[in-house]
Image (cartoon, rainbow, N blue to C red; front, top):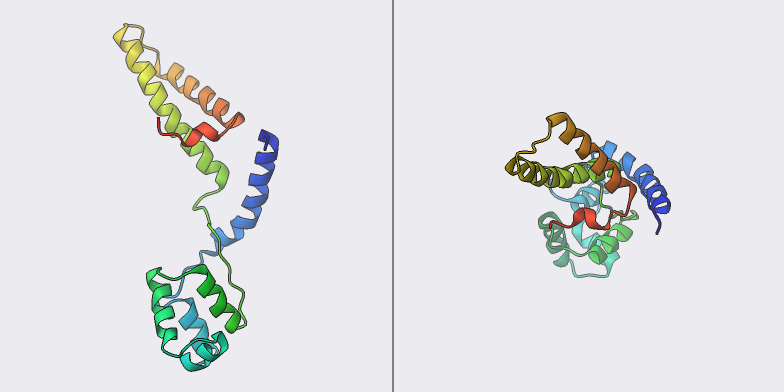
Length: 154
């Protein structure tokens, strides 16, 4: 994927994710399965029958959801049994472009700090304004090129 395609894909993804981030959806303390089941007035036995599972399995499923020990397949089956749509998403805490820019700044700060240290050892220290300008230039260079190396910690 070239740079323009990646940028367009990121913008389209951001449009889809933004409403989810703004909604601030938080799972009910006892889990979605139990919350929806009870809101529908459905017993554990009734949900079990709709899932073609044993009644004793429903409390186990509900507990596993809360502890994070369930599978996507099980969540999907429970949702379908309650006439719901299962939604699975990673919702970035910030816009994707902000995450990229912050990472580029973080990475360039390390590089600038090394450069500044070396220059000081050679008695060629740069002014803070020059270092800031160089950091801005490096950030823009990183963001305008391939992002593959952005997440390398070396």
